[in-house]
Length: 143
Image (cartoon, rainbow, N blue to C red; front, side, top):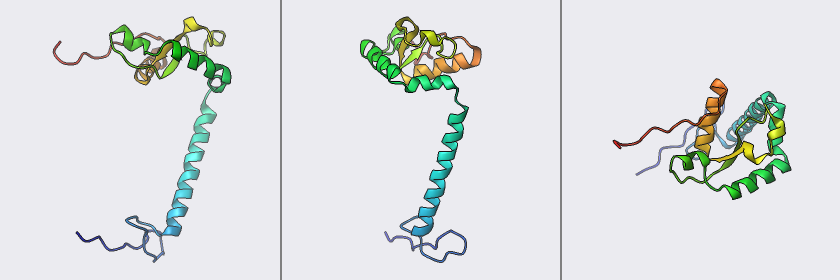
């Protein structure tokens, strides 16, 4: 099957041929990628500026070590395990959020090992109503 003919660069007033199957020439493709990288960097900067100061705790070596050792001791998601599923834990969550009680940040009784799905479901529930209850997943099939 023959290849389509090369297209002209889509940048205004540029008459060079586009690179590969793209829509821009090499110069304007590089320019577009640089603009996109700068926009992404600004977006991340704006997002991080809105994050609370308590989130800095999660970047400390103390938390990283505690999280790693807790997951080694609890390799399965505690929420999934309570309903009979075997799912590896991918993160450690605070039962009482760290923002509310920073003094309980490293206390084992306030931690639980979760998979991402459970963490996102529980985190949404906490954000919506301020309660960290477990939500039963929907039952599959007729059983």
